Image (cartoon, rainbow over all chains, first blue to last red; front, side):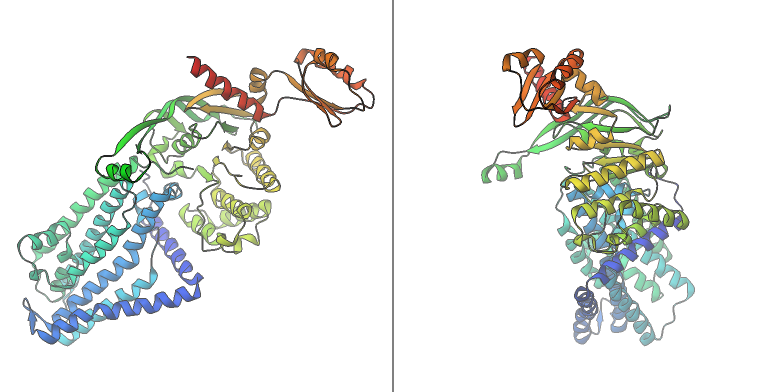
Length: 268
Length: 336
């Protein structure tokens, strides 16, 4: 595909698309305020299950109440990033594939997959992500824990691996939409599945635990970064999680290249 | 613009097949298709070969479903050819290399690249980033295009509030900001009024002359093609039926020259029949189709008519030529 573009170029491309999404959000006043209020409500509602659990249980599978707050913070951060960056881009790209307007995306001189993954953003959902950061900080303060540099690095590595895994699953759905053109609902299914990541991976047993670690690596997205921040994640886990996510992304990328060859546009 | 020697587009044995789902009408057929879907293979383009020089203006003509747009989309790298060789400015389009994509632009009359909710100027700015255009070049080109297309005020209104013609002018600006050397235009004037068609046509001609860009146009408006394209490629059933000038096609399909004159009084029918084939007679105008070699003699006769005025000799209209060409092709296929 089109290679040879620098990282600086792609950063400017993402910046340009983000600017377009913010401008579109600002274009309609009522929509602007509604989305803003919804963004704040969304963050607040995300904490309801946590409050119920903490009220009725001392610990959940060995996680204390404030450790669960750190976990919920990681979940809210990932969920916010998914809603702000991944879901809108997937939905918009699927719309482009269905209507044939992917033509104009593919005519841009950059990697087609990157173009699809930055084709739309929902900036308001970043409020949720900020709320997540707030929860993580609050939980750590209450626990009286200051993560070491290595813990922070491991948490960032796990967060990166988690996002990479989310993108990979998204790309696989996008590939499927080249064949079956009405798959927008799959991104909502993805969001619903993501909800499992608000609980520690230890809650799940056997088959489900394996699925949520290696197939749809929810554990990688929230449990492992929390454990890293709490200073109890093994180095081997970091390596295997990153390997799993990279492998998923490589598979998604190969499938994408194959799917793009089958793009048939739409009638003029 | 005089075409240069190096080819801009080289196409050899190009083919494209689509696998298309089909089913009968009705609920029963729809339910059956859920379990077992039938597919048919459609040959959209079959063994197409041609070469276009840099700086040429070329029109693709053909009926609906002839394969014109599919060919354009393969030339612009959107569709992978099923077989055949294809090079555009020395690049293989399907590889979608950024150097290639920066040299081309595709404008589709029935699709838009402009953001629907925002003023067009925001999409222009986004394209500056996407095509990595130097700020100075961007300002200069934008000023030039805005001035030529008179969209200074229009580009600041949300796209959804623009008329079709205004939107298409803004689409052209968005498509040309990176100064492409090849411009693919797919039905750019569709649905527009005559004044707007003329305006777009004139702009495209000027862009070709001033920038030396190769222009490949498909349009159902024969006037667009006749006014803009010295060379046409007629495609039907995915195959190339004709490659040459409109005049050459007309000579081949309808060699008779259409000769018309206004007069106070016309000769009797039997005398007219000796001059040529009578197309129309009455309402103050006489229209004849005349053998090319007989035109000078017939003109003399017509000019001698009482009150003779507004004598015009021209080729048959392109619409008629095309209709006749496709009628013959269909007849030949039925006979085969």
